[in-house]
Length: 371
Image 1 (cartoon, helix red, strand yellow):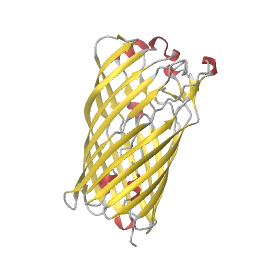
Image 2: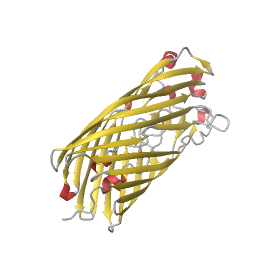
Image 3: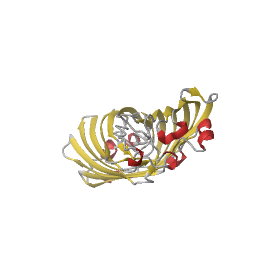
């Protein structure tokens, strides 16, 4: 049986940025590693979230206004075959980010107005893959991660620390990944398991309250979370393929605990719950030039009480993609709609608002070229 769909599942993966657990914007996808021959790809896209809510009636019922703000992302990846058994890849992406802002009262939230989080990151990954035979392979690599951020707290919910602001200056550090894959080429079948290590950043930290410095510059250690990813695909006919993935991220180890803030409040500034995301999809080749794919992703709800800096809880998303192939070039266009789960911002464990009926749209393009 001649399989026409090799690689279709990985073409759609990562084509669309998303809102995921914690502050994740793109998954740590390694699909480029399984492309045939030498290959380069460019990915770009954007997300337009609609996240808003209202203070509880007991606190005045103020509308929070639009809390989540749109963002664009781009990435590049290159894969090279050194021998018939050894290959390598280099990936540049922007995996984590946040742009959360609560408008100040009046016109915004009385309880959370002035609260803001801005996070930016860039990650560079170098990977080697060794094929023991046509079925079994092992991959491993290192990651360099750059990140910075700032957080402001505002509104009556924060009491005496309303007006607090912290700057986390940009810093670099490194982590690693390792995994294994098993393939049945004649069926376009593959299953892979990858572990991504945490990356520990030591940020130079400046804290202020109402614009006044809170002590000298200090250092805050923040760990980006470790994760396990299982991905699989298989052809079910010469023109149809199914694919799926399970992704667990240890967000509970991602904490932001600036020294003075912890001393003032007895707790950290940011903390999240672990997340597991499930994805299943199907791809179909209509002609030699055109293929399509559809997938559904699901992230179960966690605790309804959430950080105001990540004011959603669980999600369900649908992605549709069209893939055009001509000679050595492949162009994937994709669109995603994600329904975001309702949540209750609860600074210090006290619910003050409800975020409901929220969603996000995303779109992306991936251009790949084999040579």
